[in-house]
Image (cartoon, rainbow, N blue to C red; front, side, top):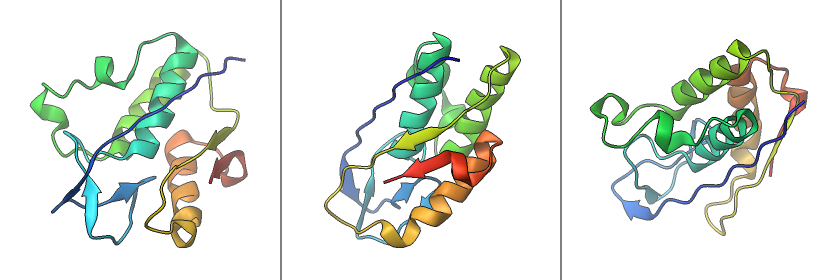
Length: 130
């Protein structure tokens, strides 16, 4: 068993979709980034990569690579989970925290959990988002 920790921050800006946990959350601002800027999934990717001793999301998906421009972070998460599987590891459980005053995320948490669980290849009861 290995344990990793992930953390990510992106600036909120106008004229961007707000994507969290693979879910589009209706809001007047979105997160700035090269990919879809999903800070929740980026933090999860970093946690898994950290558990593997494999660096961070920037090392694997650099913002200088046009292939990752606008890419769904669910795709990045699936790739990271495949890297873990190639080393004989699976996600045992995941507990994550999004720190934001607005928008209210409670209506979207269930869908986030489901999408993360599918990307990680585990049942939703092993995933927590708060």
